Image 1 (cartoon, rainbow, N blue to C red):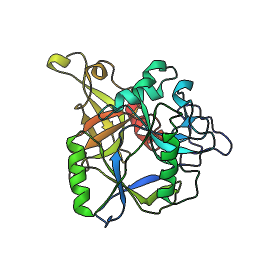
Image 2: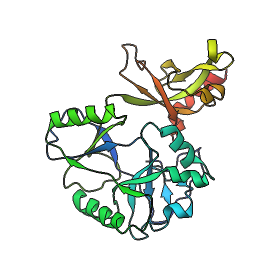
Image 3: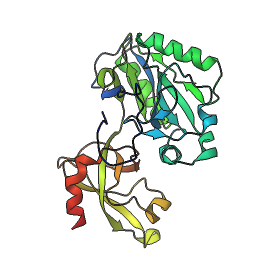
Image 4: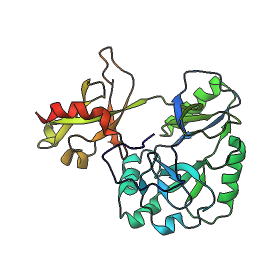
Length: 286
């Protein structure tokens, strides 16, 4: 993904660098007995190419040298820059910044794969563990994987994790190779769904939010408009995301007329492809 799209940060791609990342499909209840389960971390996906962190679309993240010190030069890693559960907005702010400096100390690099190794998943993860055990880098962590016993195990684990504030679960097919596209070898399980939408307007706040944004008018890429206010911090109501921003919204399900039910604002997307929303922004300017 991500190649040749306009807009956004200037992309600095390295020769022989990243050719896309493994992306998950949604679990629809298939038999996953014998698969590997891990927590779905709500951080920022980060690919270590031996010298720098790249976003899933190949944009460089400006981590301080002390944060990347000791990461392998001969091994690519795939993981999440993570600031803790329910800290997506803070994490995103640090990672997106060109000069977050000391604030990177709040993050860890939670690694779940080594894409440059042409080996089965378990062997790749073993190599990641060996790397982390060398303790050459203070911020690297290995994501814990548990062997899944079947559908009920997925449901009890999901229940336990989401009660603790986690975003969901990831399921990894045993023995699978790393592919650089969306794949049925990696499945995600969430109680809530999320979607992307483009901000097209604001609604004035009432009461304590007087003079601020009470909610955002947003559109899905199919043009369906809805509003979302829940989940916005006081600071975000004072300075709402600019019109044209692509936001992530968490919601329970789609209503009959295609709107997200119980939408909650999660944050502004770092690395969104704006092209699919472009046609709705023309209307917004009128």
